[in-house]
Image (tube, rainbow, N blue to C red; front, side):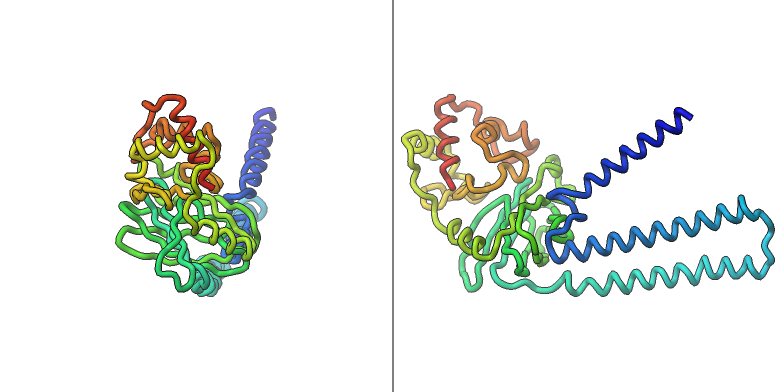
Length: 330
Ligand code: CUA
């Protein structure tokens, strides 16, 4: 009795937890876009169908073994096997296949407006925005922004190994494969911040390869894109100017670009508007001075295998200045 009650409590707890996990910024079941909406409906239809069939089969099993445990006439038994074993599954599977195929063309519809190119790197995302007619991209990293109500085209590439691009609240997932260009399009309907995650094992820090997708109203998106297209403004405080000098003398510019300065490296993420991003280290840390200092001091402790070297040799004053400079890159 006690054991049964304990099982009941555990079961109820697990159900509550699993339902709670259906909500939030990284859930395919709280859709904020057209594609995610269709996929969520597909999921619910499949789930309801699966539960109905499960109840039917187990009901029959229960009925025939406990309620009427008698031998069936041969004809009835044959009809049950042919009907339940061949006809019923054929109809159900054909119906599901037809429904599944019917939603595919919409998922592949071509986007318009600004195209976004995302490249999977060693646990971060290189992001290029290509406004219509542009011959040069606007370079960003580790976050994408999309206009609500527009279908945007996203091209997906990978630098060295396979990754997979997935923002569950906005749509399905698509692999990023070295040497190939894959396409997807997303049509967010509700503004807000959605969390994405690399969905293909890509090495030590695969689980730490995330990104935020920020959906803006179209006019806010245009204003934002215009702002990040500009080079970085000069450092405004004495401390930030010292930090800019530390950035250059430490050679950070060999890997990172800050447009408008001598830093033009392309190995690591572009930092021109770093401080305006919603996260640091590809969706892992909040954009705070403490997190910046911790990341620069020892990236490997936060993201094992990250290619950025640690800068634990910097004096406290140098680190404070460097962080002040980076914090000013809005
Ligand atoms: Cu990138 Cu997993």
